[in-house]
Image (tube, rainbow, N blue to C red):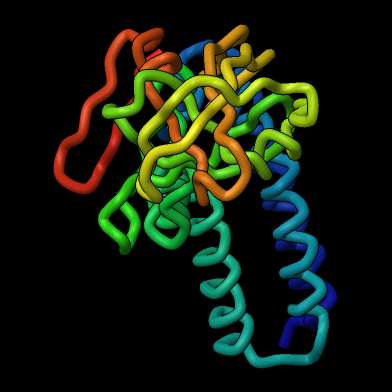
Length: 236
């Protein structure tokens, strides 16, 4: 019976030869192999070698041929899973983003190449979007009925606005009834990677508004925004 150490040495030697052969094959042909480009497959070769070395460590113990074969199948399966995951990493990233969007509707599902950001409807039936206003994170309620972005008094303070110097002289109607607001210009508003500067906004007087609103002064700068079912899509 061949000593397990010899099996390990043979296994590592053959694996290294196969890895080098694949590298030479890919280098000779700048096309693709198994759906991967030359660079992508080259990046996988170190992973193959590392997996083989770990597998050889498991085989170095005194085991039967059937046990060694079983271990080999396990490691081959792990490598296959890693290869599939690497090949479809972009699709898996999209799936993960959708899962996060379902669990946390305020989080955007971002398509940076298409300049799109999608949000899921919350359990309350509204679209509440995670936004960055003047560097401060805060939720904004999607509201096409609001002529401009409207910040609550507390959110305005978080955004670095000196609310003590504002003049609340503009009459407005809110969910709590009539109130007054001050007109300002926000340095920067960003949602799902879509950013705008110098956005016109209203600051509600204290206790007039519980949550802030994403109104038309931001939405009208977009190429398109639409609601389909439970999904809101913003297009830069």
